[in-house]
Length: 310
Image (cartoon, rainbow, N blue to C red; front, side):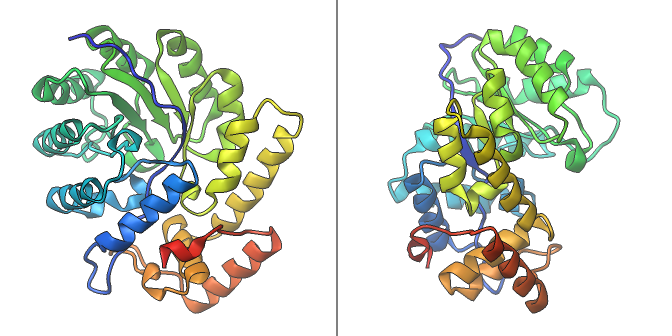
């Protein structure tokens, strides 16, 4: 299978999923949040880790994707997470996403069984690609061993690139080890394989090494500053911009990140329903919210036009 390559670049956010009090997804707020991110020039990695995607069913994710498309959101700016433990679920989500015309699919490996072989992971990804059988498909592999405990290795990438040139387009590296990220850029970047940093903390390093950008949680709440560094990374103040991004990230990282970001949106919009996370996660309590707000005030945190999310 071959295809002409189309590469995504820039800053993407694993879009937070707003839930109602009964834990059902709120499609209206989801659409507003996606539009707000697009206005900040952030791409939409819906159904990522910070979307609480693995706490949602395939049907729920399909319904949210369809709601975005019906609302007129450009599918080319979407990189939905379509990797599931069950191959059949991955095929269903990936096929629907490709039919919609998305820019790419961010694909977790099957992550329940531990210690699986490279051969097993190769078969899992190959099974999805072969079943979808569509040259428009662009797969971005998702390396997040702190959560999945199922790493994406260089040997696996080499095999997939050989079998599916043009289809396997890149990866998100959320392993937290910059040397690991850099090794993939150096080995596979010349083949057009785009290696996204999994946090804005590595954005400047990724761009300087030849990477395409980052797919980062806190683009949900701090998009303007992150996109500014992406646009101006060759300028003299790039290192200072990076330090400021790291300081804001650290303020959120005091607490469970998903709950903290939702608390910040609730604070800035006045909508307390943004606090809701789906079990087994829990929201920040009042004292934690107060501490977070004080920390964010200290670093000068703002959310431009947050009223659009209300």
